[in-house]
Image (cartoon, rainbow, N blue to C red):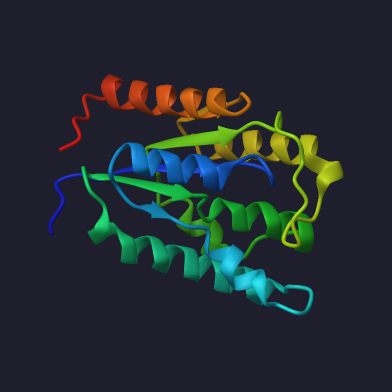
Length: 183
């Protein structure tokens, strides 16, 4: 199926902020596919500290997963549970820098709208989450990174159904303001 246009929405933010839930619900609301976070599956059975090479593997995996799901997208809309800017955030934090292949891709791969999940949700522990004490730090990092790529983003706050309603309102507002009619 050939697309004349594809609206891509990335749901991003610090750990334990409801990204997966919001992304899945938005995709369901709009009758399209949700691209899951590749890193969760990659790290699930990793029995060691991850390396810079693992970060690169997750970068390539996320891009490949997204590309593979585009043909399944309906209504010319793709909702992504995170995107590879996450790799830059983690590489910078854990390794003091990010490989050029990732930073170069940030110049060419874009998303139409980023929904930055706020840290107003309580932390939910998970074996794949690492830094409950650095939530404010990572929220600032996400703001800085999104500004650096001149991203069109909205901070999504709220608990429970309010959070989803805010994400839905931001998405609907973006689509309406940009005259995007979903087929």
